[in-house]
Image (cartoon, rainbow, N blue to C red):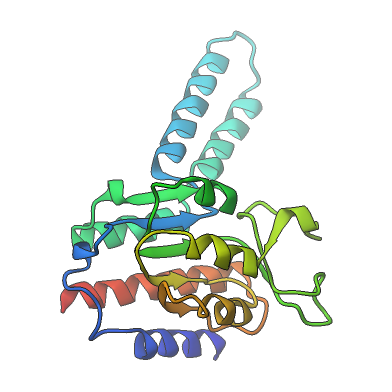
Length: 229
């Protein structure tokens, strides 16, 4: 029911009439993704791992079990993230240039890139509310996807800080997607910005990996619907 509700809210509640047509006519033509790896990073890592595997195979006496284990690890470590697959689909469907998709490992990297003034922001990470059962006394967001099971304060940012960084960007931001835990509280803060037109974060609770991927699949379907119109 939770997943069906998300899909319904997304497809029924997202903007249509005020969406630039086609999407590639956004003023800045930039999609920023915070906390996920770029297409290039995945390809570079895969190439390096394959070279390492070839070198290992050339060493006489290397156990077959070790080689097989490394092959399995290569598949796991270089599997495209859900963001990469979603954004490739978005770009191919819309004609939006892949070069216009910029990946940032952390919010600090996003803030430090003064040339990045995105039309859309996706975030891959963890959200925390300021409620009593939270490890923090204010709404916070992780710096990226890598975070300990019990997060430390330095691994997160107050959402108010992210709001400040977004307000410092030039131009306007059409849409921010937060398919993460406790996103409703975080989205409420980001909606205070005059620079942001829409923020999508409907969740009051913690979500699991399969729910996160479901949300990204829903977002992909939404974009495909936009491009078809």
